[in-house]
Image (cartoon, rainbow, N blue to C red; front, top):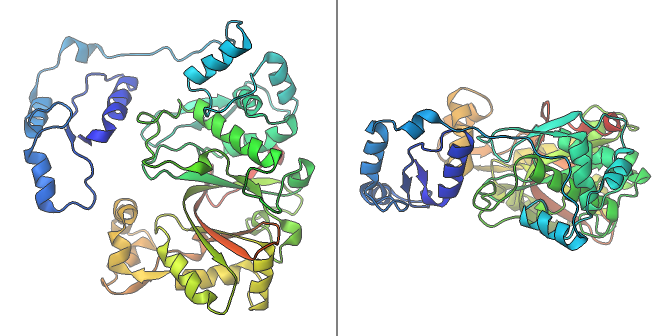
Length: 428
């Protein structure tokens, strides 16, 4: 049973899973925010897809006999040819566009010569599997190799020296093209010497489209995920209700040399000379603050409590803002993070009224997993912290033209679990 907006996705998923005749019934969308009477009317009404009574669809789906097609099932040939047939440049560009192998923007055609040149950026075997990707948890995994990452890097206009960074991002196993209805995207932070080696920008416009390395790496990561997991087709493998501009490019370096604090990778056990990539899952909200000014605490509290409780904040601040916080007594990131955790408090009823807390955190709470269990036991009006200190992260970047602080939704995830940056050096 599904809501009707998932009709194409549900039917395609059943088909690709080898069960094309799976019985499916649909109710209208939305279901969030509806009262019991409205939801009951959905059940008593018609299936908006078949236009037959919903309950009748359910009964027939559960009790109807299997047909020959049901028993036979379905299978697919997954292999694809390594090369396309020769054609004109214009026709090949159109072919890539028609097959949704691009982000709809013009690409560099991935010829054998260009891919071979790109592969010189790594010592790894082109056939080595970098990661297994999928746009959502219920989809099957697709394996993506070093060569396939290189193909997408060429398409994105990246250089061979960018390839180890792109490989590390893909190796995280976190897709840059998620299919969540929330339209979230990913943010990735680069640390270590690689930033200077390939000319990344951590100054003015660090998160904008003003630097080749930043944007080409971000685009290559997104394209590799799109093509390495089965596409990003709206209504099928992409269900973001509004969409997210961060899906185009969301990779930036930390301004380590101009930060008064330890950089992100050193906070997580790496040495200063290591180059790493940290992927933050979320990115669907952004709040801005400029300071810290006299009433910074009140402003920060409002930003923290307005953040989605499922997706803790990644605080990206200009070096001038970071130095101002040091003058206020926050001589390391950990002290400011602790303050943020202590002040990100909301009433328990408000926390559990959140759609994601109710559907994603509640099962952990019922299972006794902390801190969710304690939050679930709290009285409705009790003030509880929405984020533990280890959930909140701070990264310093920017051109020092304004003491800006941005709060992005940023759930830190990695291949080996939470809070684990990926080594870029391992992919050189």
